[in-house]
Image 1 (cartoon, rainbow, N blue to C red):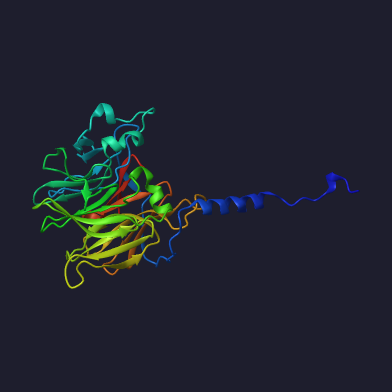
Image 2: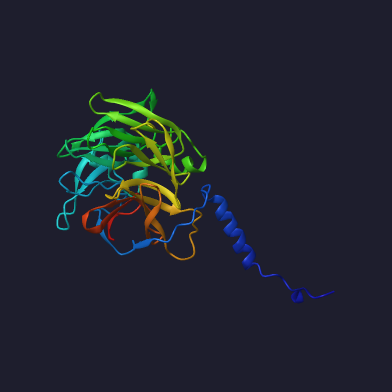
Length: 353
């Protein structure tokens, strides 16, 4: 009999590592169809200035907006408020909030994190100004579509349902600056923002794209049965909307004018999970990517943060940075400055292209 001490055993480390990788891949959201990123110019998103929020538990400046005079940025945060940036000396100040907000009830603490109060305090996501009126439209995940007039204050709820069906997860918003029409999304009829991972994991396709008419106060459903519609932006010629589909990693083009009005088509596949979409000022769009397709937590600490696409859907430019940064919006301003929002971080980042 061979002594036990002399029996050669296969090393377990590689086997365990392989099993760990396979388990991780199984737990990830269903991957989108891979699409290689063409060679383009790259912006280093790790070299950025931080517009830090006040308060150790305040975070999540999800969307970034500027008013008609160029002031801002404005951003909605985790305690239900919309804040305004007033420069380095003054920092952030409260600009708007929804009905039911109070400092006592909505300020987070270690025993009462924002996740426990956001359904009552609100969670502002998409923001967009109508420049002519000075009105700020707010897509609040829980309270619906809201509007606050010039000067801010308590916002008015404009819509909480469409076609008799409640808004469960109000998300993206944009405004036609000529007509004043407001376009917005409801990401799911089944899940709320607190359950957003379920929207992707289950392949939920109950999202809606809608229009609010400020002259009649009527909401019209433009398209239903969409897989995780998130951010959106109106095209430079105002003929169509570009809508981010987070789960499928795609951009949808929905026509609002011309012979194709009322129809939708695929604009492009994306190399990651998109959030908000914003015009780049040159006829194209910046699309923030929460993370890349099939991204793993180990390996090089660098991933795609955003892509700039042309009107035809082709990728023109990319931004890369550390994996700890998962942007929700990128807004380009004059001078090549890119303002980057995130639902997780305690600051708005400013990157110079």
